[in-house]
Length: 278
Image (cartoon, rainbow, N blue to C red; front, top):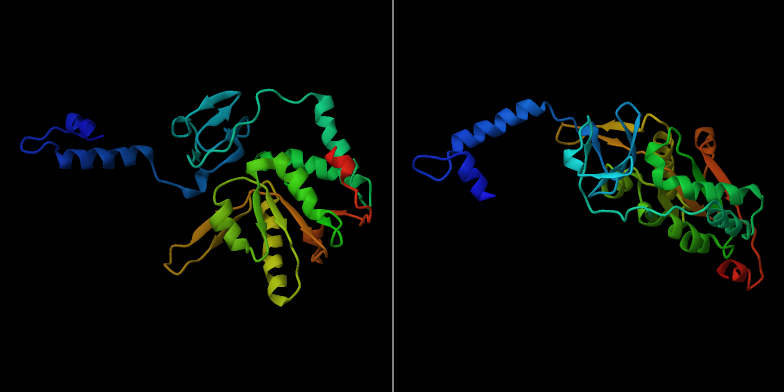
């Protein structure tokens, strides 16, 4: 506020001694030390202080050991951004019986393999805290048209993962995900209609799979790229994916080893989702 500047840096002829104010800012920068953009952390779950402290950055609040902290005031080597907030987690955890209903719900779907229900439920649970995981798994829901892929995303996955997930589909590119949606956040990505029907789409999916590959490990998937201004930039992707498509455009082993395939069998019963809705 103007009154603070007038009080701290009183001038003889003007209200503010601008030289003294500028000097104070410069000295403050020296005290803070060099700025490292690699230390910026957005929304999501993180480990701090040599992996001994779990932090949940909601955007306007840090939750550390159950207590709220103001992001700029929290001590540590990392810079936690203050951005549009996410809703806080419930203070009343589900009971074991209540949580088990998610698995029972997934069991009602028409899976090719019964293990798929457990993998889907498990992914939904760990996806919001993917940034704090040493390994971030991804799943791919496969099935013919009308088998319920979109229904699962809309009525199960989105409702559980909520605002933490980035919703993408169609012509989304890997660069667009990192620069526009993900940025410094540690969030899961739901990618619907992940089809590779032509060469352009194949190249686009290949880049997104590479983003998944480098973002799945504990190293955080930091990439360094040159820019036209000569300064370069680095990006970090700590994310896990849930894909949905008719075909599986994955052929390379490094990608296949990071994706659990959940295949659906088409059920012609018009009331196939009646039990699930109930």
